[in-house]
Every structure is written in structure tokens, then in C-alpha cells.
Picture (cartoon, rainbow, N blue to C red):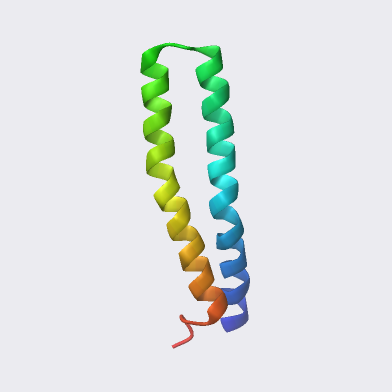
Length: 71
């Protein structure tokens, strides 16, 4: 079970930046398709909220890889 936790930690570490990348990519595409202020505000809020969540995923994964959850 501890090996599974470590492997999932690696998954979480990779998932954080990858999710932010695709979110920003999608936001830029949607803003270029619909360049109104409502779309810009909506996607800015999504990105601003998602970045701390992604940082939390990376931190959670780092602790899992280090073995902090083995106890």
C-alpha cells in the first residue's frame, strides 16, 4: 500500500502543473474566440482559483513521495 501511495504522489505532482497548463491553454483559446469582458473575467477567475489548488496537489504529492502518509 505504501508503494501505491508513492506512485500516486508522483501522479499528483505531475497532475498539478499539467492541469494548470491545459486550463490556461483553454482560457486563452476561449478568450480569443469570444473577446468580451465577461469571458475574460470568467476565465481569469477560473485560473486564479485553480493555481492554488494545483500547488496543493503538488505539495500533497511531494509529501506522499517522501512517505509522510505511511503512519
